[in-house]
Length: 426
Ligand code: EPZ
Image 1 (cartoon, rainbow, N blue to C red):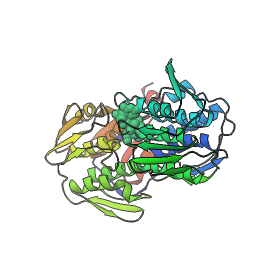
Image 2 (cartoon, rainbow, N blue to C red):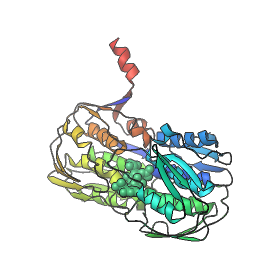
Image 3 (cartoon, protein in one colour):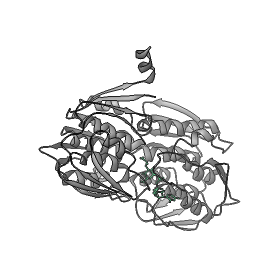
């Protein structure tokens, strides 16, 4: 499997353009199942989670046309067999969105239990609760979740916990149901608002996305539209942290500053300077970074998807930092890899205590999931010497051309394939 080989100690400088948001795009691609006409999606990131989503649609009978870089035409009218292929579904969490969309259109769905980043237990009980509220019965047999409904009737859905995927799947199942659905304790992430905007542009009637209460009046028909995906809040945050952690000076273009407020605030707290403009920002440091305490929260709080990256920055910040991330059972699996590089971190349950050290030292490390992989790339750029990051397939699930973008910022990063490695040996 491919690796990144990074020579660290180079402050990033220059400008980078942010791609479309992964977690909006995977939902919107799945949502095309609900469309009665073809859709054209723009600013779609070229990442493996999107490739897999498109492959699943194609295997079910949709027609997919690449119209240009990051622009795709999707016509799902040809889908007749709402069964999602097992191996494709297991490779990502977003395959759960085919439950809500197939149920919303066909009143039936057979989808393998989702896979994705190993962050501990990731049940779908709240998704099933939403489907049951609307009139669907579910069974789970052989790793396949099967939904059946004679009809879908709007209802009250109250989520016991804040769930992005559960909120998105409830919207999918309700958007063509009969009558009014009210979702309470809804997640408020920017990708939920983007999805609602996409569906409303097709003729859906969704109010309150981005707040705790979302009201949906079912409609019979959703027309085809052309729609541009919002910029990726987490990709942008990752480059912001990389710039600060390497004491660089970077312009980040194609962003929505409001989506980055919690990340910007934390970076300013540790000593970075962030200058915000309408669709870009300028981040640089003018001295050492200092400790902070951090607790991840649902949006608009500090996003859990930025925790590994920010914790990595804190490994060389002056003082002792405390990071708590209890959104998932275990989102600190990357810490053992950072310790190989000299980081001084102790983890107790869902809290990490980070003693700042003077410098990280290059080592061979292994990506354990998508954001952990990005964090290890940042660590490699911060460290003295050479760092090899293995299992970079995790990273490519959610970051478009991360090595080219970092090279554009002056980083010394090379992609090495195992084949090249093997050739060197023989
Ligand atoms: C989405 O995952 C994102 N993935 C994750 O991003 C992100 O970390 C997460 O939201 C939180 O923001 C996609 O959008 C594809 P949740 P999701 O349902 O929907 C528990 C990345 O790096 N829960 O909000 O799976 C769950 O176990 C990825 O881009 C239940 O208990 O997250 C977790 O502890 C990683 N029952 C918590 O809720 C349920 O039915 C939050 O999960 C559903 C969730």
